Length: 426
Image (cartoon, rainbow, N blue to C red; front, side):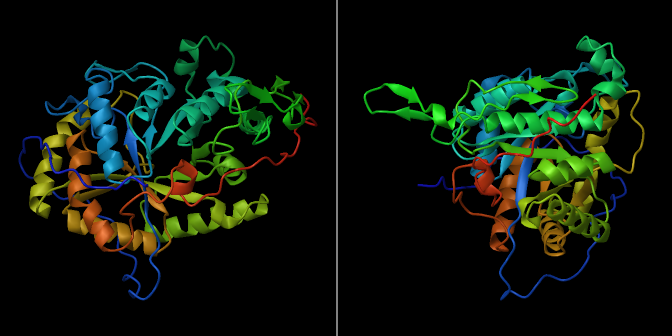
């Protein structure tokens, strides 16, 4: 039976400071559709990391590297009780110094996701992995293993570029432009997907006596020879339960759009205007079609940061209390940017209304939730916002299926030979 979802009832709130001007809220695009119109469903991911608004430094906050597995388990179970689609375990890939001289640590995402898989049943687990510091075989093996461990709940957030300082920590002495070349990233993802397809869906067969046999006719060794990679295969892990784990990619450049249109299931963006976001979503769906995919095979997820309270004024006070933590968490190289998450400061009712407006305007398919602090920010969202979304009929009250792909309404990717890239030459 599907796991029932229930909002948690506790909420830890940091102390409030002086009032501050309320930041701009989501722009409203148009009125909700009539109730007779079938309601489109919202998708929600929890961003798992210590960034947030810098409030990992707050006394009530937990940290992924200091509080340990018990705190992680409770946080993941809170997200699952709220019926969120997935937890996105981000990775900064290096030790980052802040403006105050402290360090931003972070645990390796695949290990973290494996721990969370043991304590959850339905919520998806998406791990960030950077292509410049990896090889397709290793990533394919890790993702296939995580998909089996989680019984079909694994996803890969593809990070295509890293700064020179990060590459240096991995021993990469080559030009970052070479490691982060968009053509290399495309070939990397292509080879990884071919490795997942190097065994048929039923290659591993059990006879009921504990004996297993491999059907050699379902071996699809890729024998890839390309410009960047030479991989023979097949993978030493059976075909993943989802066929292929879910793929996500943050889009900031034209090259990112090309990769996402060809391979991604989720596209991560940071829109600040609903009309422009709707144009981008239509463009990505059209690019999917041009790449030989159906337009509905992709979901656009906007980044959303929020601070909530019982009134707009109280929310502004809370945001002001969190502001020093955010300032202390910035790195020296950080600068104001238009590429920032949507920020909502106000009441739960106002946030639910704005989220519905963006959804019905077809600006996004859902949001990546950046909580102001954990666990309190997530607990407050689960207790005060999720029920409102459910009452509006735009968010699930239970998980209807078991796999991550099914949460997003995406079919299992069965074996189908991908176009060869063997023609790629140096």
